[in-house]
Length: 200
Image (cartoon, rainbow, N blue to C red; front, side):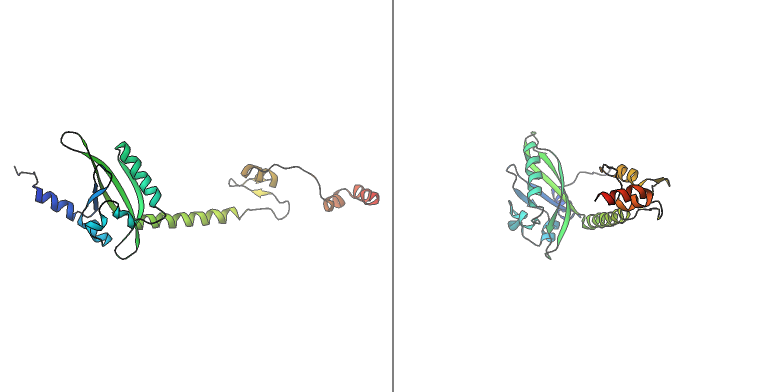
């Protein structure tokens, strides 16, 4: 049977050449290691990324939430997942999905975190585009009501015709107070309309 145990050099090769970005932090929450894929992605050196240096690449809109998730999970020594934009070596921001896991020494003592990141930019942008399309469709639907040109009833999704006030009340918080306008009074109740005109 073939020995499946890996040597230190083999482990190192796996970590350095894995198709994901890998980082590690110590017990002070400062990062002390980044694999070759991370450094190639950012175009920065280990010294530049060391400690909190890596945070220089986080998009300003994501910075506060990113650090909040990380520090809160670190205090509780819990697994965390988050998405944020990180500046690539060509100064283009890419969306990363970052998963951090606490690791422990052979004696069970908390030793820090190990994290892995994958580029999910295409997925995020596709979701954002889908949301835009859905919002546009919803806006268009909100602006189209099948209404009778004669009696002004509105047809609902089931094909039933409703009085306009019934339909609006079902789809909003509007309450109606019924009255009658002068034009309708003159048509429907000409005597009352004539009398009201004489009183003015």
